[in-house]
Image (cartoon, rainbow, N blue to C red; front, side):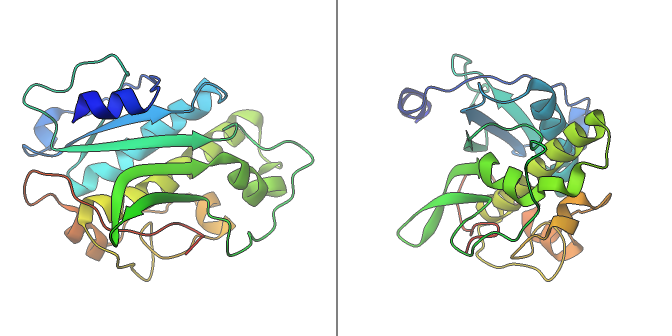
Length: 218
């Protein structure tokens, strides 16, 4: 399966040091994430995305491992594999941006579907994210803008990972797994999974399946 997926995508590597003890995680909790389309994005933004995603997924018992296209899979195969595509340039918005609601048809992130199920092929639309955040982050320093932008990307990915890993189409009322995000959600200092979502996410067994929707789209 890995050979077919890697041949399908010209995958590129983003390294990240998670700084987490493996003893925190149960067997079968490793999620290998292959990244595509990152060459036009800022490395510091992607670094913030990686760190935040690791922190968001850890309470659910998952360890995120970023892979290079030429890397060998984990010995014995990872329990979960997700392909992530970054669309557009992932960097803090230009000064000309504006924070306005997105049209209902325009999603910040989503995952592919087939036969009524969501597949482990996820994307984030950074052009839409730039449009969504806009001037809302201009009062912050450049380093803070980079942090907020990368953190926002991680929150979008965590939402999609919730659907894929928990095998559910359901949303919660609050937190990362709610149906739609506001600008305030992405700017908030704390925005995590609520308890009900964590309960669904905690991996009961090995194997990858899917079930989800998009963020700010459907």
